[in-house]
Image 1: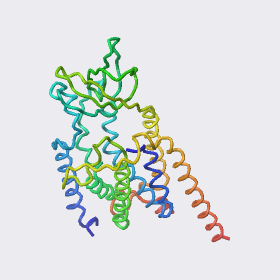
Image 2: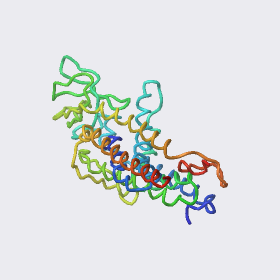
Image 3: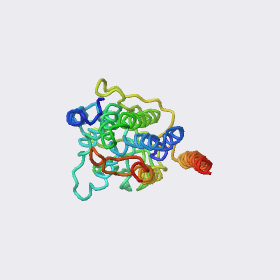
Image 4: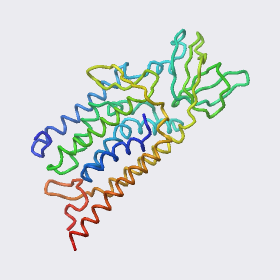
Length: 154
Length: 165
């Protein structure tokens, strides 16, 4: 009854507003972020703290033994736990120093990460194919609806 | 999170016992948390070098939590005719719950899934496998799902032919 067309004008906007409110709460709630997220924005503020930074890319290696790590558009200078090479995707455990540099204690490599990304693309294409085979968009008495293939084909 | 192919296979394998449209919706639900909650963020990150602002996708992250996913499933179900809508919402929701449950079984280094959000921000994690452990398994699971559906479709066609004869 709650998802009927009769109550659609009220229920659908209410669900939309609920989802927006939930999304806003999620965005504003600091507990929704990984503890290390703030360290990317301001590494020096995390001085003296130990953090785990998952899935970061090594974008530069200094001959002196320091690394430039990237997560999204943000970069971070790190030292220790080598040898890492440019292009590596690693999760690192480390300790932030007063100057904002991360001293890496341990780094775990993720050599399958690229394959996982490729499987994501394959998954999206596969799902699109399944939905295209199983469903059709048809005009019904209540307007345009997604209906199982075969319904209304005759 | 396990890879998307593994998520789809985890829904398509048991889904072989369901009606075809419901199995497809179950599969849609099993991908929904990543499609809405993760893919936009990945796309934004990829476009960061073009000056695209980051973090715009953060509100969508709530669809990667059970309550947000269930509300999104109900909204998606409005695209279907009224008669099958509750079952459609249920199938998509069940797929999404399966997704976040599988994700909670992955090792996130202590920062698991906020399964009870917004009632609680507690993170749940039962680290049974690593972040990429499902990648080598994905082709096997996808093949198993394809074989199971192939057998089912072949049986349905054989039954139709017998009915016509």
